[in-house]
Every structure is written in structure tokens, then in C-alpha cells.
Length: 315
Ligand code: NAD
Ligand code: AKB
Image 1 (cartoon, rainbow, N blue to C red):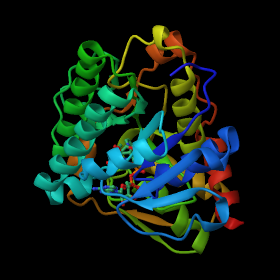
Image 2: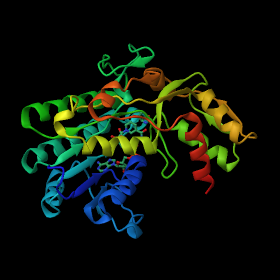
Image 3: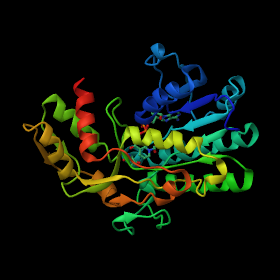
């Protein structure tokens, strides 16, 4: 797609945590008219936004093709997936949706030549990566979700190199946002804790207080996504998933930072099965390659993120 062409955008999995925020950002930048939001769930949430909505299962390739033809789609943000905790509950379904959906989108792009955004995750790393994960650290995930993300990255590199598909990806850290609750991930505690704090409830955190993970405020993640999709193709040395600079804090540090703003807030820590997935992921990711190739820099730190989350939820 040439940079000056008018965008006609399809978003899959659009009703999720990232999708609902990305729709707002895409709509402000390119106009609501240029977007078709889709999800396997039905919704009337978008009625007032001017964004068209169509119910779509990403495993239904014929229906995706019909939509791509009808709306002359030239850019796809492929967000439909099962996340880590949901994936471990149903590995077969996780493989089917995460891989089946991506193969359908890549295959259709061979014919219709649309640009694809397909997110990866810090879940590509396994417990052999200690501390900070670099762009080229080993990829030995311990979850089925992580396995689908590594396979997705390999597919992206393959379709780009062999079939000239313009596909781009980011290894998102755990994303922290207030508009939509997260959907079945391990990093969900870092969102739930804010909802409890603002509602005046005690929070029981499902990972232990020392758990440290790569995290990012949603606004930085959405900006990274759009910057990557607007970057000149020839500048991109990675197709499967760029590491991003991120925040890195323990669950206890997050609790203490929130407590500075809401002193009466209390939290206890009772690790459940998700502790194992968290323990298999790195503490932080190094985002040098994304900065070199397309200039990404993170804006929010822990303090400004906590302040913004609490202000936004209070409103
Ligand atoms: P989410 O669970 O909030 O949303 C996913 C959406 O996909 C849901 O609305 C769901 O209804 C839809 N969906 C599920 N199966 C579908 C199907 N067969 N057809 C169509 N739609 C279907 O997830 P999210 O947090 O918005 O994540 C989006 C992408 O970003 C995923 O690929 C995820 O792996 C990746 N990611 C997210 C995070 C994060 O912290 N949110 C971090 C790393 C990577
Ligand atoms: C999850 O916890 O599964 C996601 C992710 C980091 O990919 N938030």
C-alpha cells in the first residue's frame, strides 16, 4: 500500500481490550468512515461512533474474503485471539483461533495485497531468558499461547519473505488500560488492581508481590501500533514482532504506587495457576531495534500511568 493511499481498514477481534482503544485512535486519525470493526461477539457499542460493525469469525475465510472484496480493504489489524490464561484452559481452541485466523489473513493478503498488523507478545519468551529479553533472545515459551505467538512470528517472516506480504508485528508487553477489561490474560492483575482501588475494594492479586513483568500503558501501545503501520516498509528489519521499550515493576511496587494516590487501598497476594505463566516471562524487554528502525519511544512511566489510570476511572 502506498503511503498516500486512502486507508480502508478491517479490524478483527475489535471488541477486546486493544481493539476498542485502537478503533478510537484509527477513527481520529483516518476517519470513522474508513473503518470496519468485526468480532465473533455481537455488539451495539459502536453505534454512536460512526464505525461500521460486522459480526465475523476469523476462522471463516470465505466471509473474510467477501468483506475484503466488498469494502476494498487495504489494511487489516488482526487482533482476534485467545490470551494466555484462556489459552491454557483450552489449548486446542487457542491453536485453532490464533493460528487458523492468522493463516487465513496471510493467505488472503497474497491475493488482495493488504497490509497486516498481527500482534505478538512477551509470551514468546520462556524461563531460559533471565531478566531483560533482547530482540534476539531465545524463544522457548512455556504456554500454548506463547507457542502460537512464536509460530505466528515465523509465519509472518515466511509470508513476507516468500510471498511479499506486508505484515508487521509488535511483542506487546502486558497492557494497562481503563476503557475495556482485559480478556483472559496473565497480566490482567495490573488492570484489575486499579478497578478495585477506585471502587474502594480490597484486591486479591493472583501473582505474588515480587512478580516483575514488562508492562505498558495502552496509549503508548496504540501509538506504537500506528507508528509501525505508517513506517516505510524498507525501514523494517523485523516482521514477526518487535520488542518494545517497556515499564518493569513488581506487583508490590504497583500496589505501593496506587496507595500513594489512594492511601486507604489495600491488597493481598494469593498466587494461583497464572503465577507459573508469569514466572516463565522476562522482567523487561529491550526495545532498541524498534527505536532504530522506526523511532519508537515510550512516554508513560509508572507514576504517570497510575495517575492517568486513576483519574480516568474516577471520571
Ligand atoms: P481480548 O481478549 O481483549 O480481545 C480479543 C477479541 O477477539 C475479543 O473481543 C474476542 O471476542 C475476539 N475473538 C475471539 N475469537 C474470535 C474469533 N474466532 N473470531 C473473531 N473474533 C474473535 O484481547 P486483546 O488484549 O485485545 O488482544 C489483542 C491481540 O493483542 C491478541 O493477539 C493478543 O495476543 C495481543 N496481545 C495483547 C496483550 C494485552 O496485554 N492485552 C499483550 C500482548 C499481546
Ligand atoms: C497475557 O497476559 O496473556 C497478555 C500478554 C502479555 O500477551 N496480556
